[in-house]
Every structure is written in structure tokens, then in C-alpha cells.
Image (cartoon, rainbow, N blue to C red; front, side, top):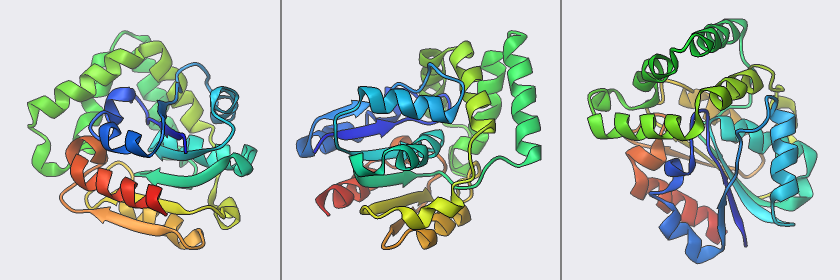
Length: 229
């Protein structure tokens, strides 16, 4: 079974690098390109155009918004679904205004500053001073670049409310979250798991918003269990 992985905001293939060696034994692994469009619908359509006919789909954070849109556009092509540190709700007005300010800062040449400001919310509180983890987040941001990052922020602001469509998901589904995700609180993962029939909820201890980097072994174990279903 081909496995399609979708990164989150400012994420690149590096986000999945710690878990891919364990996943590829179960099928060819592809990391989707989510940099080229400024709407979730367009990103999903382009990914589907480049994807295998049928695949297991995992989306992290923004990648989860894209995965839920793929489920709306082509549910028959998704054999299994994993939603990692994401949510079904749309942006609040407050969140949209915050993203607009981020875009303004990026357009004014303050891309590194915008990425740095996000880091404390990305990781478990115990890792706020983790220089190695910060360097990895900065490297991913460099992979993405400011123009694509701004497009991603625009896409996130315009995403649909997916709560009403959760009940339509019929494939085996994993919902994974960190116990201290300060970017997307795990209560929103609980909400998704309760809305999807038969979904399995996994909460990783001592983990923030980046489980693949913060707790790779636990994250890989949960994904392997999902692939074995």
C-alpha cells in the first residue's frame, strides 16, 4: 500500500524523516508537496493528481486540513487515514487576524522572526531551549521559503469547517496528538476521534505539536499499528 505523508505549516520532508525508515517496509512512501497553491482545495487537487490511485494518507497539522479536504474530494482513494496534531475546526477570527499579521511580517522581510515566534508553541514546554530542535524547525522553514509559507497561511485561513464531514469517514483512522500541544490543543483531537466512527485516539506523553521530531519512536509505533489494520 503506497503511503502518502503531508507536512504541516512550514514543514518539509524533514518532519517525517525520523519515522520513514520504519514506514517504508509497509509500502512506498511519498511526502506530498503542499507549497504551490494558496487554498486547501487547490493543494488537495494537485496532490491527488500526483498521488497513486489508492493510498494510506497521513497529514500533520496543516497537512491534516489537506487530508480532510482529500477525504471530501476523493474518499474512495484513501484506504487509511491518520490525522496528526490537527483539527476539524476552521480558523477563528482571532486566528485569521494573527495569520494576517504574520503574512505582513513575512512580506516585510521578517520571515525568520515569524518562524522563531512560532517555535515555543510547536514544542513541549521542556524543549523551549532545545537548540537542536529549533535548528530542525528553522531548516524546514528554509526548505519552504517565505513565499510558500505566506501561501500556506492564506490557505489555512480559508479552510473549510470539517466537523460535519467527520461522520462520513469510513476508512480505518488514527488520530494522534501530544499531551501538551500548545498549537492545536489535544481536546480538538478528541473531538475528531469522537466524530469519526471507529477512530483510534493516541496521545503521546511529554510531547508538543511535533511528535515526529519530539517523540519519533512513539509516533512510529502508532503509525505502524495503523498501517497493520
